[in-house]
Length: 378
Image 1 (cartoon, helix red, strand yellow):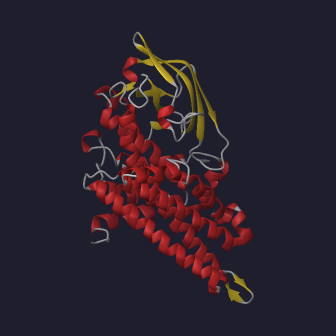
Image 2: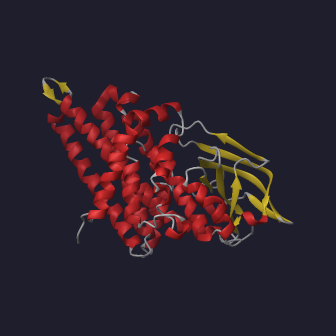
Image 3: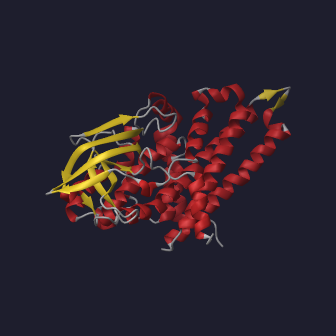
């Protein structure tokens, strides 16, 4: 089996990493994390390069890139921050719902503006009493003439508060647990919708929110695809979401490990470089094995998806393993840097915070293991 990139994939990889080094950089990333600001300049540069449309077909203005190229993109976007990557990835994979299931009018209304960087998307599934149990949601949408009337409470909706954002809302439109759910496009400035940004230790740049729907009315045409088909649509996009997350964990773990190596080589204690102490170099050697294993697992899943095969088990395996690796690498980095790991200037505390979130966000590790077990027939 050939594990190497093709020339096209290598060029794509090198282009993206040069972009992150030269057009983004550590200081820019650190500034937006500390200020809890959306990286608007980065987002617009990604749009101007045409990269927001990676997952959209060419006849809709996209690049129609395969999952391997998408994984390379997500790995690079997370070079300095998982949150930075999420700022770009979240609207991208949410846009695929409109691309696949939207009406011609919905595609025309939303996708060209999205590709220009003017329109953003957020997806809202979780509720205070329905997190991992996503099918247990109780937010309801009831048809009243030519309008849907929405009432309920959503949480952990990342990016919903940014201007010009459309929320892809999963709401209950029937009584069947899975077959009574629909996706509805809701502008974030519609009357009756209250958005509260949450003060979390991660998602500082993208931001995550709680949503309150009080008799919110949207046109009947706001339904995405078929009524009561929302569960199917969400599960379609979860493969891409989890692949992108796994790739981003690999990208950030690589940087965290490289930073640890660099610091221990340059830091002297007891008359020796820290990197010469066996306990530290063995940790870094183990982390090197784990990062490479996570990367191979991720690109194996991407390759299977690129062949058009079902990869539910593979993307869950990649996500849960890569999340664990990212946390281990950041944890060991915190230990190696000691007191310096506590300050933002060394970036490690950000890697640590964001890696821990990776074990919960986008589907908790426990849920991923349950999916893997189910796919094994257990």
